Length: 67
Figure 1 (tube, rainbow, N blue to C red):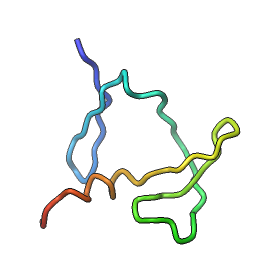
Figure 2: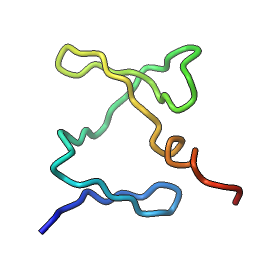
Figure 3: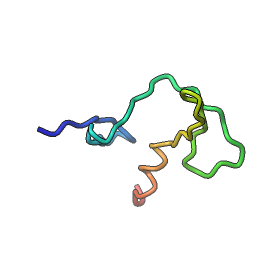
Figure 4: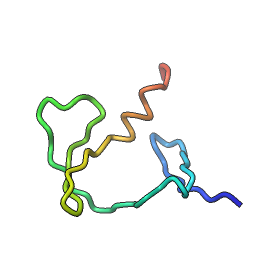
C-alpha cells in the first residue's frame, strides 16, 4: 500500500509519495534574499548547509489558468 503526505495549497489538496520525502521541517524562519527570482521564499541554514526555501503556493499556482 502506497502512503502519501497530503497538504493544502490554495484550497486544493496535493500529495507527495512518502518514499520521496527526506524530511519535514517545521518553524523555519527564512532570511529574505534581495533580487531573488519569483518562487524563492528565502534561505535558511540546516546542519551547516545553506538551503533555498521555495514558495510552494507560488510554484503550484504557476500552472493554473485564469480563475
